[in-house]
Amino acid sequence: MALFPNLGKDFRGYMNPFWIEPAKRDVMGYKLSGVAAGTVVPAGTPILADDAAKTAVICKYAVVEAVAVDKKTLTVREGHFFAASDKVAISGASPLVQLTIASVSGDDTIVLSAANNSIKAGDVLVEVATTGEGQSAVVAPVALPNRIVSSVAKIDELDKTCAAAHSGVVLENVVNYPAEYINASTFPGSKYLVGCAGLLFTIQ
Image 1: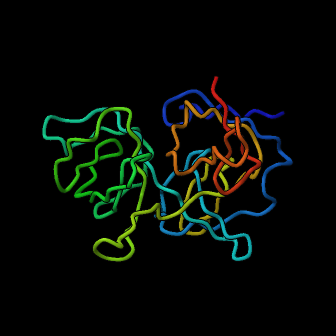
Image 2 (image 1 turned 30 degrees about the vertical axis):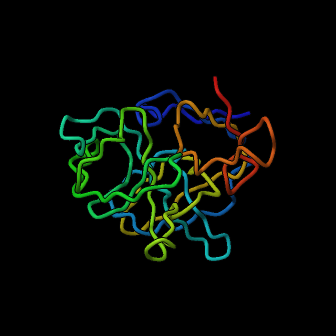
């Protein structure tokens, strides 16, 4: 199997957690929407790809590393792609509760519009949207991934595409994807990307 090349600064500051055979990478690139020129998309970023349209959107999430005393200023792992006004929820909560991002500072600070006493270091925030109103309102992830980016994509004005993988092994305890992005029930004892049973998660 082929290991991703040394990326210098590994996946969001951690060890390289992806093993993907070259033949398991999709033969085409996907045009990323909602990504500005100059953005660097790391290998392993989860995406929802449309095979027919050859387009994709990034499935946004953030790992919380520290919570300030105001309970709304969060230090998060770099590379989260969130922006002001995005809606998030604490991954794994039942039910998911929508929170609003008021501002983003640099690549490692998120400020919520209101204090939240439930958030703690180690939590994962997942992008969500609310459908319905009142008691029938449902909060759910905006996008569930069916691919991961297979090599670093540097977005510019002419090239907004990324390469993606549909099969491989991912170290779950390094990437810290939201629970909503992982299928842990269809194949008892194994975990896979929710939209692609070829991407296996394991702990090392």
